Image (cartoon, rainbow, N blue to C red; front, top):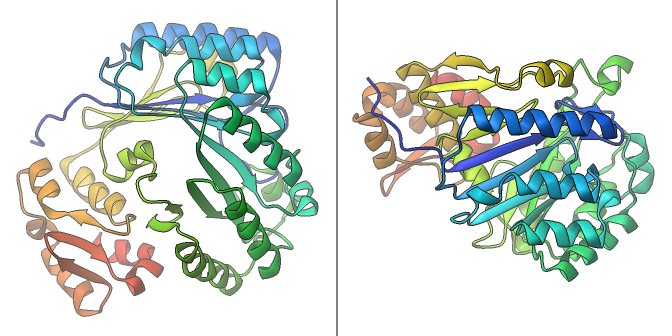
Length: 368
């Protein structure tokens, strides 16, 4: 039996509303409607009553969707729900889109304790932004960053994408340089994955070929460290001390609470998912699809998530979690991968080598 875990100290809240749907988006979303937001807020309150939240949260993350699409009154009402739980919160993140940021909303966020913002930049090329269904320009991004700084939010993360349709290496390089010029503390860079249930998926739009995508990723990994951003996870780079504490909860395979339509959580040896359908959620906000996790599931998933981190997995953390040495379950396969130069064990850690990191999915398949 896997030892009992400590109470979850991370909370994720999903806000499913957007003013428009991006062509690549496969997250739970609904087009913003004032009446629907009011019903959603009531349902969220009801869910919170059914599932009491820990009073010792360390991180809160409000994602979406586009949380900043809410009106000032709606934003205040939503953030007020979490005021009782933020006394020990170290990192309080909210996702925003540039065109939905204004001074009043930024002040409201600060008043409720938000101290970190994750903003969807995606690319600084305005024509490419229109191509992927975004409603902002790079000028909007610069303006939004200025507003947030004036409100007192200095811990800023910017999201960028690569392998976008018609994106050239030159466009990517300028986008990264433009992002760095805004001096964010954190950068996330994701390759385009086209899912069937998206505008791109339904219209047959493709991402770039594998070689072009690999070239872009390699350039990113070479360039950002020279700009002061150390890679600490496959897609994430940060100034020292500004790694996302909330996302590290996922990568360290700790438990976390998920609230809201489209959210997922992991607690007490089970994963759970909320419906992505807003109407279904409004009818029964307490319903969760539970997925029990066996000890074997948790052993592999812990290794899988930790190996996404550049520094890998601390072997003593695995032993503390499962009361067993990592080598008992993975020793033979791990040894073969080390002999191939894809994994290395050093100073009490197991990590992917630089070559193994580039083909991490293949490494994980061999570990399975």
